[in-house]
Amino acid sequence: MLSVIIPTFNRAHTLPRALDSVLNQTQPADDIIVIDDGSTDETETLMQSSYPSLTYLKQNNKGVSAARNHGIKLAINQSRCEWIALLDSDDEWLPTKLEKQQALLMGLAERSDVIVDFRGLPNGTIITMTNTAPDAPFGGFPDVAADPGTTGQVMRFVVNNALLSLSPTDELRDPVTNAVTNALTAATNVQDLVVNPADLDGFTVAVTNLVARELALVEEESALICADVDLAGNVVQLPLFTPVAGACQDAAGNVHPTALPFAPKAAVLGTVDTAGVPTVTLWSDPIVTNVNANGTGAQSAEQWNLWNFTVDGHPIHVHLVKFKVLGRYAIGGELGDGSSTVSASANGVEAWEDGWKDTVITYPGEVTSIAADFDINGLYVWHCHIVEHEDNEMMVPMCVGVAGVDCPAQLF
Ligand SMILES: [Cu+2]
Image (cartoon, rainbow, N blue to C red):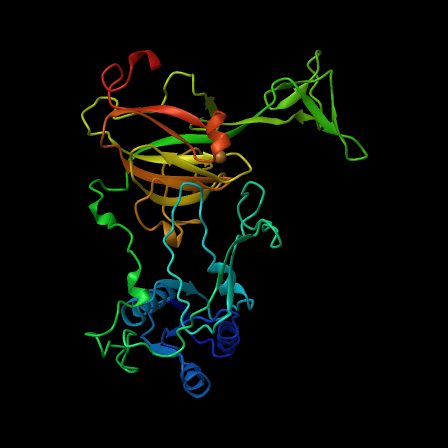
């Protein structure tokens, strides 16, 4: 169930364009809710004459956020909506907007339970589940989709026993009140089978003002080879130059204007200092991530800010804790000053991340913030869950508790 919420105020001249773009979607919305924030123009007449089938509600003028929230509440309470799409009354959507957005984004080590409603589809209907994510490592949005002829195909369903007519166990609803009228015989509606995310209210520490830890995902460049691109576009090695501090220098100390260390030799993890500069820590290095180091438990809740300096998305897994995704921020944006204080907003939390998680997708060029209560002392790891990254150095040990007590002292 997907509801579109459109707040509007005195936009009768642009509202039809917005509404028509929603009505013309290749994958239609289940419900279109227009919240009129007290318009004094002909919005009300327009809605009544041209869009009588849409949900239209007029409130006293309270501002766009109040209107939007009003619409969301309405969608959840009355339409049993699970997905919300927001549109402003002076904007419009391309016809495939909803179709494309309803794709499910999954990272490695993530599991999604999906309920597919095949009812109403005639025998012989073929439904193909496709992978619209890229074949190459995920570089964030937008990206190049997998080849629809080969790697883009995941699974095919053929409807061979159509449920075209009403079954005694189908749920019947009053068209006006939306109340179930055959509750005693109806099977559970597929919409109600959705498992709700875990209740985050159970998180016993405040998720603000946590101890913050700045951690890095870095692509380690070659320490030996410098390369440049020649006029024909070929990558050529420059044997007289070696990498120094991210640039290329010859024996006399001259820095090459265009050459760079080449190529990335490993994806690694590390820490980030207050200037936003990463330092690499390898698997074999002394442990730097020591949560609840005094062992009292008072310091066991932390906010981890995962700075992804690489060009790929990485699913980061933290062992043996569940965490909450707080938000995502562009590197160089809110956190560009090196401040560890993360405010809400930015790219934010995706709809499917509204619950406990143990793996989070970190997008390139962003800081992904999570909050976790490390409630069981011991020696653990945190790592990228892409297998070849675990095999490289994208996995480091961490200690929850006291060195020498909860984790072997020689690892520090
Ligand atoms: Cu990775």
